[in-house]
Length: 220
Image (cartoon, rainbow, N blue to C red; front, side, top):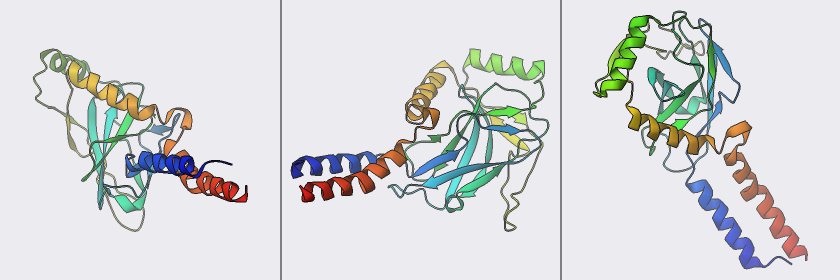
């Protein structure tokens, strides 16, 4: 027979794990997801009902996987559980992998999605590359501006959200910022590599395995 006090401790531990989780969890993109310039694809998430709650609005930013900010995808209704991402046809190549950062008003920090790719981007001009390199070497902290001339609307229910605004601010972080970014992203992605969803596993442990253990314990 499993001691009742051990079962209680296990349940409390699992609940505490859930309480420190994010209140919002990205479900798309997943590992291997690809988007394509000139075509719209979905970004999806689910709310975990954990505090602090996300609130009404969710802001999604597009970054290169190494940490560089490209543009704000838009501000969306957190309860919608999905948004449309429409890379403009003249989006230039910034890297082989990208990542979305989710920002809620009450969150302690951003939530990172899996890395993904954007197909058919155009080559960036030498001026853009040189500007990025110069900023990274001087580490001035002053944002530079990149023009991404495209505006899209979401196709559902007539509501619209601005996707990749016509004038976006691109921030190239210094080495220290990039190291901090990579570390935070590594901690987040360690729980999600290869589709390993800790949130779903903890949910099943608390609400499926725990009641089953109680039933077995009582039967014995």
